[in-house]
Length: 340
Image 1 (tube, rainbow, N blue to C red):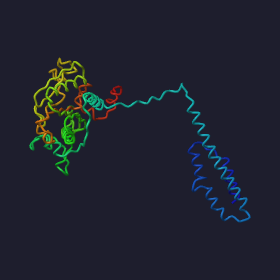
Image 2: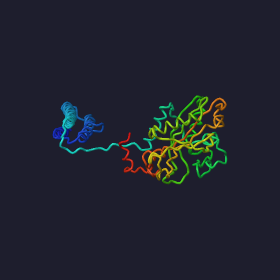
Image 3: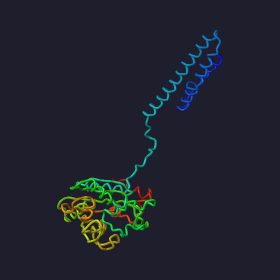
Image 4: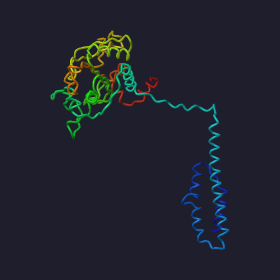
């Protein structure tokens, strides 16, 4: 056993670690729980009494040598790291790392939220899988409304009363159930509709809806709010017009157009040569919707609006195909790197 220990001592003295990996392998081989040193101490029990003193001394010498070598390896590699860190060769070519970019939909969504925050509208969010009450019934959708048809809505197959929300109006209902007037908020998020994907439509898109309920809220308040929004999103010369429309949850209802920001209202293919582009739907909250949320419609009134984020992004960046937002094509997305 003494000869074996002396042979190991010589091996340890001659060993050179070429890397931190080699140094760690050395430590494990000799000093690990299943290493050679532990095996030698286990065999020491069977050494004859007259040889124990000399053999024990050799074992202790080996143990000290092993720990010393491990410490030397560690100190050597730390010194190399410090030397490399302090050295910079300015003649070497620079390895530029490209920075990431925000998605155009995220850029526009953040800007919309910022505009409404200035008007005192906080953000409220909720679930994307909704029940019939919050997605349709409480919003005054009759049972035979086309939106309930499978062609427009993704219903959960195991339960036809549950569907992917078709608008963030469902969050408005949940918000009014939890809060009492006066209240105001915006509701951004993903929505889903069972539509054919094309340059102008998609089965998944984003909305920002808004709600304001208080005493004596009027259509004039709605108009002024939306005018401010349009001019903040585009420019101070942007004009708006409101056209009568119909939505089950608002009465009266309107669709809002803005003067085309591409041609300045003169007429182009984007605005179909009318000078106007539709960007949102809006109206005064139907009294039945307020009553469904236990809000006294005789005491309170309110307005609501819904804006498609992708539609806004198409206009702001003059993009002609909605599908580009969902294809993750880096050639397209890199164009927005400089936009914050």
